[in-house]
Length: 113
Length: 114
Image: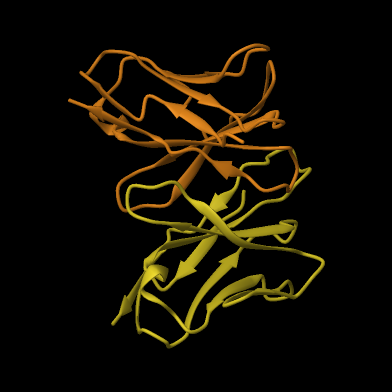
């Protein structure tokens, strides 16, 4: 029973490049959440998606960041024109919705040079 | 929006002693409060959670208490062991409010001294 999968686990980008992070939810889960964790800090909510719908993107920067969860395939968090401040661990979580437990993936550690 | 404060930021206890971590939240509509444990370089893992219709929940050496009136909840770990060393995060969420992302505290680094 595979848990939440994320890839890549580590991603290095130069300033100005694009970063594409993928998340496959746990089997049976249709709700996906993305969080960002800066070094030595807690997790900050970014965006909540269901299949083909963005439900809440209140925590996501308005520029350069976008997210999708297509009908087929993983959820993708896309960061355009990355800057050094985007360096962080990006975690996704999945659940069956509401207050059901959110299970986290292993994270993608993005380093911007 | 919701705001979660967590204290202390670092807690050092002797092996075998108890550890208590406290959190307060601001939104009285929040109704679900999970606790996650995160080891260095690993994913956050749920260790216990509580919903607003109960005041206390226990699972072996771990317990959580919730005071809705005061808007605070606490994690209690008894008979601490070396493997309890990690960063612990509390979180709050208001389900059904249209914003179902967890709001996390800043974390408590728990150190178990041998």
